[in-house]
Amino acid sequence: MDTEDLIKALAADTRRPRLSLPATWWAAAGLAALVAAVVFMLTLGPRPDFAAAAETPRFLLKFVVAAALAAAAFGAVRSLSRPGADWRPAAACLAAVAALLVTAVVAELAVLPRALWATRLVGTNSLVCLTYIPLIGLGPLAVFLAALHHGAPTRPRLAGAMAGLLAGGLAAVFYAAHCPDDSPLFVATWYTMAIAGLAALGALAARRLARW
Amino acid sequence: MDETGDSELARLMRAALAGDEKAYRAFLGRAGDLVRRFARRRIVDGAIDPEDIVQETLLAIHLKRHTWRADMPIEPWIAAIARHKLVDAFRRRGRHVDVDIDAMAETFAAPVAETLAQREVDRALDTLSPGQRTVVAAVSLDGRSIRETAEQLGMSEGAVRVALHRGLAAIAKHFGRRHGRD
Image (cartoon, rainbow over all chains, first blue to last red; front, side, top):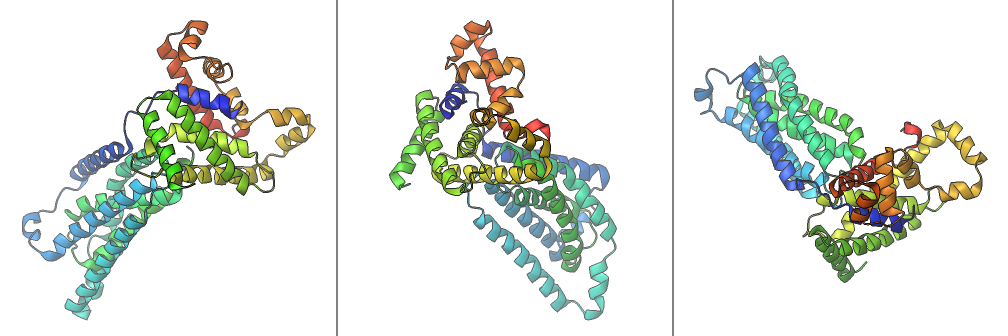
């Protein structure tokens, strides 16, 4: 078949995808948040002293970091689903989120007596954290990978990893409402590990994303 | 490509997305020229037929045209897709050389003229269901319109459109993946 013949067939095919790429991403974000919320409410639910905790800066910081991570990863994954789009601004946002977390850790080390460092880092809930952030994030990850499939990722492994970060950040927003450990030392250790697991899973699943 | 050329391509694509089939043909023709130049520059050892890259890229451009934003320069978009397809083809070929010794022997045994004539797109066409294959061949090789194809095959125009779309998507999926091994 000559290229001219192929072009005839392509031009005659006027069926187009129903969803634009931005619409796909926002629909995916909504669906993923819904899935995460349902899984969270069915399995864990918010901690009993939620209202009191909501007035402490450490508790609030968890949401700020998790939401910032989700927002930055959302930007990254959206650019990476579009061939030729520049994803460096989104990468800069991700670096800013990392810097925010590092700053919080340094501040915590400054205000906390040295004797408490290890206690706060280990916390009381690390296994729950390592279990439930991936569990809550698994459904969202599947949704975001499907959205990537609708796009055209030219760097599938990176795009899959960003989808994992996004799913992890979203899951962490919910999980933070349950977790009794509020220290940045705990968050920087266990949340990061759990979210990195989802990112690795996303990168692994991305093999299939390369085919389009 | 200079800036005016780029915006001309973008103009054609915008018209195409608004439903102008003639503009779309012109766009695909020019995009194909761009990709051909790009592929010929990069394939130096003759291992891959640049025209296969052109065809695979045009298919991808077509099926993923919703990933282009109308206010985005179109040339980097086309280049990114072409690069992805070229890298993919090199990677696939590397794997076939290692794995697919039988197919290589077949290739060597086959008459030269025949191997030259059969493109990857034709191999992919062979994997389609008979219905899809007939429709794709009628529209491409025979150059028939949707309506003529529908009349000739005794199908509704809607059914022809569906078969064409699914056939092209299936060709894109099978492109360069021989014997279902990859």
